Image (cartoon, rainbow, N blue to C red; front, side, top):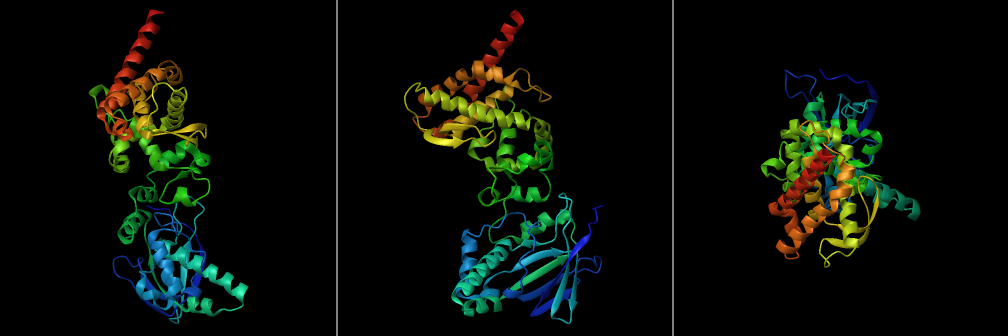
Length: 405
């Protein structure tokens, strides 16, 4: 049973018109209200917690919304699909005021009531209203602001929804631009094991839904990057001993989100290794950059002279290295994982002693087979196979030396 949370806010909204019904007799708590509200009466503090993604006011769809708001506000209610939101309960007073009971739980595991669809519309309204308010103060004329405030937006309110229903509703109703699956998975709390393992501080740097990294200060990488890391080391899905390699991490990484949900049993045992995988990703990156810096062999595509801050450790490199090189080398290290996902040897020592040989295997294949095309290294199973074979040989030699001592 879902935990009840305390209603801490009542939001009164003046309306022009409203329609209110209980669609299903068997679920009287699930009410449906549609109201037409002047933009000037739209609250500016509604939460977007139920929405699967962040609103990007610079997206193509958002720019169209803003254009209508600025150039034809009177027609806005006809040209825009409006806003859908959740509430615990609704009350209509005299047909002119709607009172919303909104939950804003202190527990982050719960979802606050707010906008579930139409987040772009809501944020665009707030943005353009603030601009017009500033313009009115500067010019002393409120004509444009008055016209804007008189425009109408359609708002639908749904009550009595369980958290498990939010993702399905968000996916079904966000039709202007399809919501990406990882945003919906975040809404369904499928990333809680990752958040628990990495902790609140690291999670401040992770984008768990669309537009996080671009719009939220401090976000430096997406949860997709972590799923990709675990895929590179997933010996259940891509056992190196059976000559199966996670080439999909380079060619079609978006498909990994489906695997995270459908093949969760193979991923969850890797979650405790995440901090290691994050560290070794950046170490492999630096290994490649340092090798290229030495000028070994001829110049190659896939290396660009550019200061780069690495995503997981914040170490700095003077080269930007293509993932077509990083991923096959990193994936070869999965031979060092035992069946219980513990390390069979010291990975740092292995990289120090055998890392140059892995890089040599990569670049030899690239020079001989890829004809200067970087992406060929990333999408060629032969490339991944050659590096995995070298890693296996290096590890076997290391084990023989240790037994001989």
